[in-house]
Length: 134
Image (cartoon, rainbow, N blue to C red; front, side, top):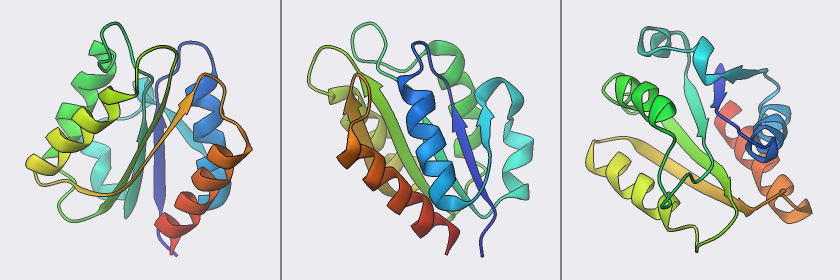
């Protein structure tokens, strides 16, 4: 079984709820982004990173700083990207995934929820956590 890090930033609690579901599937705990660093990547086999869409459908700047610090450390380890949004189309997730893959990140799934995650998103998150833990 893989050691999975579920790292998130949440403003309203929606992305935190998503992180909790993913962690449940992976049988691990969630990690607030402020408690993680690129130096900790080597301690894990798989990752889930979550951030809601901010402003003009972009990542929170503090979270993005952590993400950028970790990108070069992932190697071929599997990564799931997740987050919630309020308005817009969820385009920030497509952009995030494209940038991650261009940087060599092994993105195996993305999951988004409009506002509070509903049952289908929570089910997808738990399934993604199980997949990361395999």
